[in-house]
Image (cartoon, rainbow, N blue to C red):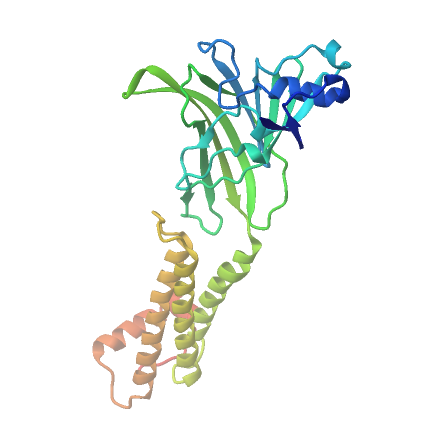
Length: 335
């Protein structure tokens, strides 16, 4: 039988130990009779304590393997060695709140350090997918609250007790769109109706991200301001000017295109309507009213007959108010 340990294959046949290097002899003695499918305890009633340390780039696991203990004096004072995670017992930790069931810790992606006292520390670099709750009210300056729940897939808390040191180590890297805000980890122990006598521990990581992309300011915010200014400026143009109708119609079409673009950019399962979408919607309605006002104003201005008394009274009243002064219609007379 051959067992892989470290980066080499061990021949577990009859090989004189004197012909082996000390490190190879140590691996041979430890792993030739090692069963990686059995929990690393000599008494099956003993609980395996697994501690998780969460980093943004990787996850560290620590536990004691009672089958990987040796006397340093017999092996030239070797007190540790490196082992591939796929060659020893590895906790079946899985990310539960995901739609991708392949989000399980992969031992073959891990590198482990084994000490002579049986202490094992493994570093796992896995890629996890999870759903984050989106608060889109203030999009594109929104926040995302994400939760990652890790637990053993097939073991109870009496077999594998999963704990955490309560910290997450973050190496802050600049991202063009997202900014790390905060995070916390909690260790929980739960019971379920199916197994009232068993406990199921889990480690839950909760963190918050904030969008800070400057490109959204240039693409969405500034055009909204420009559209509003163009619509207001159109009222300062003569009512009979064709350019006024052209500008208002072009602004209206631009609003439609921007709303289509926003519908393409936003996720379809959003529960909230972003304020920027409501702004563009209301701005489009006001621009539509501006188009109607421009058309009616041009029609009444070019009309030679006397306008209705009700309209004359309304215009006279408007010219005496502050709104009329802003719109610069004080010099207009009623035909």
